[in-house]
Length: 456
Image 1 (cartoon, rainbow, N blue to C red):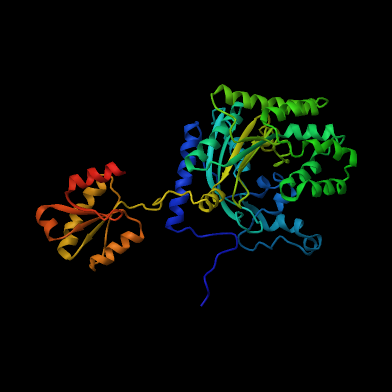
Image 2 (image 1 turned 135 degrees about the vertical axis):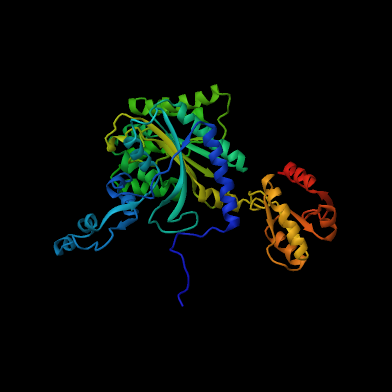
């Protein structure tokens, strides 16, 4: 007999996990909708031509490819095999599982350009797949919760991304976190300021590891990548800047004084901070990190990364401005900015910090219990009325001891049991037992409905 198993990096979700996941997802959805975002969905699979070349070489390696149906090897020749995987791939696989939600969204916008009203604000909550090495907080199948705006270059969008992140975290009870923000133009300016113009790519690959390997190791890597000692000396003052958001902006204005591109990046972030203050909100949890580098192959402006402190999980959210992305699908000149919550990582963080509300997995409010066939029949007559009133109700389906029925309610964290005995049948009432307090009272059906409705 085959032992059942799961592919590495994937998971089942039981009732408790699903209830907690829905708690997170509902919080995120409500926030997206509050800010005017509309929901869409795209297929799990996309043409490989849509996906490849959008995430850099590493991203292309992590794409799950789908073999063509039927005899997928029929077009492959010995010459193709001799050339290698790249020659074979185009003949055996035309589609792949989506790697993220941003590229499919850009494809969607390009295909539906005539039906959409711009600026177009969309959110999307669906699974994505990456052939990554599974580890804690990193899965091969996981959900992303994206919110993007296309058709405007207004920095109000960046400011509202920060507000949405803070709103979601506040509702979820996450208090100790930082929203790191930088600008792609600043990274270009830094390369120019340290005498390494045009080398921001390798520069960013190295400094992106600063949190993981430290400044000493980053310097060693930069030297290996061809940067000289003078460039490292010029770069050093940017490492470990501990001053506030506005002080960092002022420092960079001086540091990048000879780089128009870099100064534009600083000015854009200063406008984001100004917009937040004009909306009457603070700059709490915002960290201006001039060394933050991510999404270098497609981000062109602001870059976001969110980390919760005191946990073993990495970043739980990130995003940025990608003004040129839709251009590859034949729709140039459409600016865009967006971000994504990694719901699986948010879940792991909340579980590690024990932040899920107690009883959040309980979906049923009331279990109708009985002693015999007469009690079962009486409960049947109540069931539809309770559900029509919006009370989430179950009826224990088997004739068994009351103790066993109460045990089921306790295991499922159902807060109330309605006992249907001879007295209740005769008086047309229900013995409502609170499993949390142990209190039991005899109530009419209308009184039961009123009580449970008030509790919610």
